[in-house]
Image 1 (cartoon, one colour):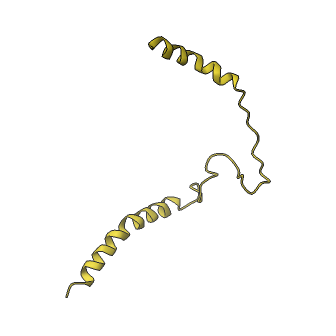
Image 2 (cartoon, helix red, strand yellow):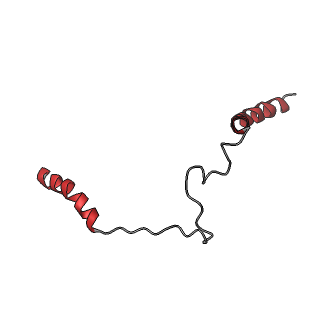
Image 3 (tube, one colour):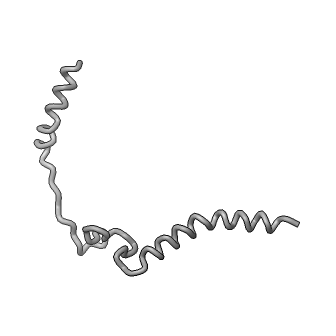
Length: 79
């Protein structure tokens, strides 16, 4: 049993090499392919001035809004 597992582990790289995987270039003229590279898939530009302020403002709003709404609802219902 152990020798069979050892054989499979040793033979795996040659099996993958035999399969002949192929890739094609991304067709940028297609509406389903976008430019590749670092930061190309982000909906914002982290290299612009003021990015840190906008980022942390967005994070603070997303984290604090539920707590703020909970406090507001609690105080609103008190007589």
